[in-house]
Image (cartoon, rainbow, N blue to C red; front, side, top):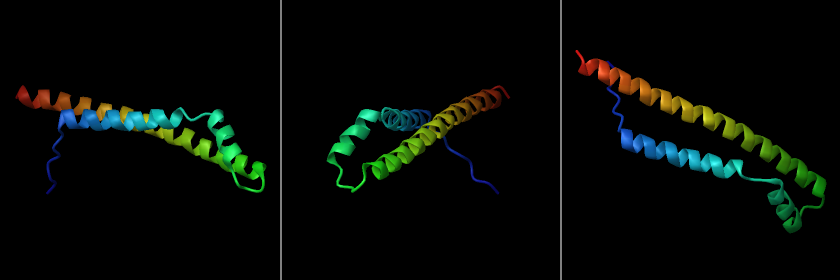
Length: 91
């Protein structure tokens, strides 16, 4: 037997917004950040650092893309839940 899922709309919305803010912060990282890191770096080769940071930015881009998909999925789940709740209320 499955357990019922309890969704608290206000808490869900707050968690979704917090998730979006984290995603926005990561997506705002820029090449100026790369230059700042480059100045402060103790690595022997700047090329190696740039490659590492390039990979990092690729990962951040992928994370942001997947996070945006997750936010849309959360919104869809919430809307489906509301529709089902209305359906049950009408019975």
